[in-house]
Amino acid sequence: MARSPKIHRVTIANTGQVIDCAADRTILQAAVAAGIDYPYTCASGNCGACISHLQVGKVAMLPRNDAALGAQQAKAGLTLACRAQPRGDVTVKWLGGGPA
Amino acid sequence: MILSEKRQRACARLLADVHSITAKEGITPSALHLIKLKLVALARKADLFPLTDFAMPVAQGRNHPLLVEDGDGHALYLTISMPGKEAAPHDHGIWCVNAAISGREVHQIFRRTDNGSEPGRASVVQVGEVMVEPGNGMAMADHDIHGTRVIGTEPAVSLALYGYALTRFPSVAWYHPEFGSTRAGVSRRHAVSA
Image (cartoon, rainbow over all chains, first blue to last red; front, side):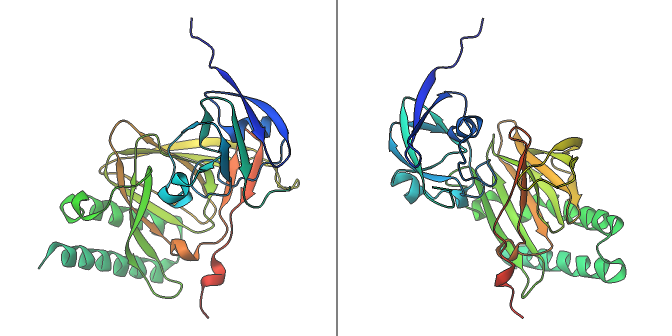
């Protein structure tokens, strides 16, 4: 029997909400499912609309386009919510286009 | 003649053929089919596009401009996408044609099923699938919807021809079946000079 993926706590700094996110889900998927108006456009690592600051914790990244998140941006602690799967409890803050 | 010159000439010939086709009949399904056959023929000449001449992606996807026409012209790119790289269903707002040099990328074709009356909401249904692999390609009209995913363990290397350069793209509409939503990207048409 397959083991269920670990569930991690994700704090959305923009709204102060804390949500659950399974390790095989992206932060964006968990946020939208929780009714949070997280900014996104392509939701598949191509546009960068969901670019966020990873303030606390670690994530694993699904494949993305170079143009959506540069190497320097990643090194500076930025991530894409649509590509980031938590590897522990994390805190993220979206940077552009959002409602808050 | 050095390889880069041969490549440039081959790309220029392709664009000349494309203009010859569209001058006769415009951007029609049959014109896009003919353009696809031309692009597939060019992609078969893999020796013109050795990967040693094109940097691999830093992440998993990269576009290399091969020939970008002036003004509001067409643009041809070599794209490299690593295994697992994907794009959600989207409508470029402009026609495009793809042909594989190496690797495999599945293109799923979708149709919108709602009437667009609710802003930000949309539903799409898959209506077809094309495997873009060596010897094959695909063509899409202005508002066709496709999603892509690289299959297997090899990078997908392909030629992509667009009606406008990526830097002059209209707003791309993205569709998210899981969310029941649609989102529009930023239009780059303001970059078009008069």
